[in-house]
Length: 108
Image (cartoon, rainbow, N blue to C red):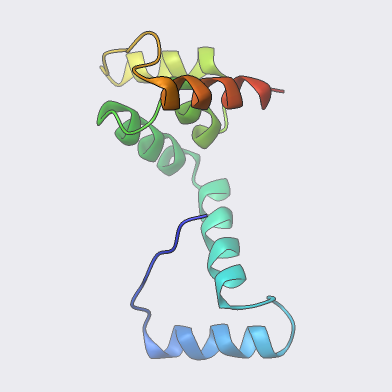
């Protein structure tokens, strides 16, 4: 899991700390994870846009893009084509190959 630093307005920080104290969230990290998951669950287009952007920049594989977008590889391929993104075929290195294998194992 990666670590990210964020600047949050005081009123939101106060609300987050209150939510942690009352047991709504386990800790601040849990609160932030929850809010981000909820946002992307409610905003599928933003989820797609983020996955497309990361794939287009070469930061992730098709399998990872599909997992992040919450679709299967075939649907992700179609989304990428609709967005005019050139598809890359085959893993570029061993890390990408492992990533593709992991993504394939997590298909439903």
